Amino acid sequence: MLAAAATGSTLALAGCSSLESGDGSGDGDGSEDGPEQTAGSDESGGSTAGEASATVAVDIQEDLQAAQADVQQRLQEGNLTQEEAQVEIQETQLELLGEAVSSVESYAGETDGLSVSETNQRAGAVLVSGDPAAVLGVLDADGVAALLSADEFPEPQNGGDGSQNAENAS
Image (tube, rainbow, N blue to C red; front, side, top):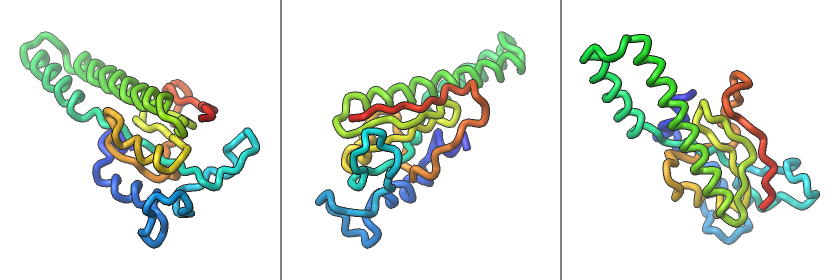
């Protein structure tokens, strides 16, 4: 799941189509009922009928490939053992995922009508909700590979992965 969330390119179309109305006529009039509904997640008691939720998959591939090339070169030069190289790549991957997730969280914090419901740093995924246009706008954020259905959000495997529940009302 980590690779799919980190790259997400083949799943992008499926995720974006879940944000449109079922007949494909969603032109942004605000009255579509096609977006993933978040009923029951609004603690303020307000209606969530016009809200959408989506899983944001972050993209770290370019930076990760550069780090892997650097580690590979140092490994070939004898400056690292195989075990050290693997540990360094894993640590770099987690660091890059954390930075990318933080970038999406910052974008959401600066965007009216958009909030972060949950994150899973190990999977490179952020569950966002809010106004459908704001949710789609996440595609403009740095480091975003794809928008997927909210149902695609990967549940954390272990507790120490940096996942969180965030109740950010916007």
